[in-house]
Length: 111
Length: 118
Image 1 (cartoon, rainbow over the protein chains, first blue to last red):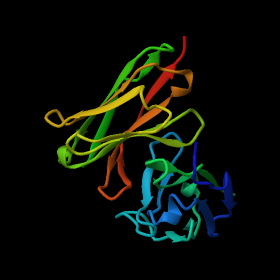
Image 2 (tube, one colour):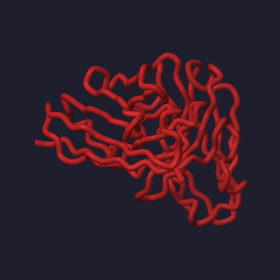
Image 3 (cartoon, each protein chain N blue to C red):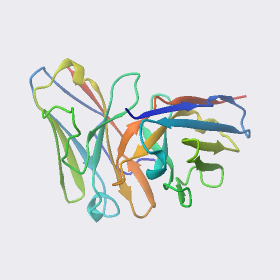
């Protein structure tokens, strides 16, 4: 069961900007735990996209950005490209569960 | 280059057991915490278990507590997941994942599929 809620899907035309929200609670994001984001291309393993709320690993384009505020976080993709079509997941830690939690996942479609 | 290669997946009987392995290379395995994360067909990611660098501390998701056991052999650079009392709802791709040391998952294996069915 996911304790971080994401919209099931978002879509945009090439070149547009889309955002994905990740809503948590006072035992995870709101408790100060960092939020991280992963991209899962069809048929492949997830890949780290954003760590520590807003940091990009080497090799991730600056079209991807993350932010966090209160009990929520967001991932923004600017200049949307066809190969951005994928599932995106947020992740954090939950003190009530004493474990790591993922978001419900969001499918990004490029129109 | 970090490499994580899972093996041991396949068909398991309800109530039966399977043991997954993950061979690690390209980094100093004994210095990192490791995790198992699973993904049921067509569903999202679910964290399963975590082990610290020397194997003395483990954590589990409630859904597998008491049934699954995570372990590691640092001499063999290998992570394990012993899965007992298998249920149909354990059917999933299981990923071996490296912890960055600050709570995010920086390297993933390709996954191994576990199917629980009679």
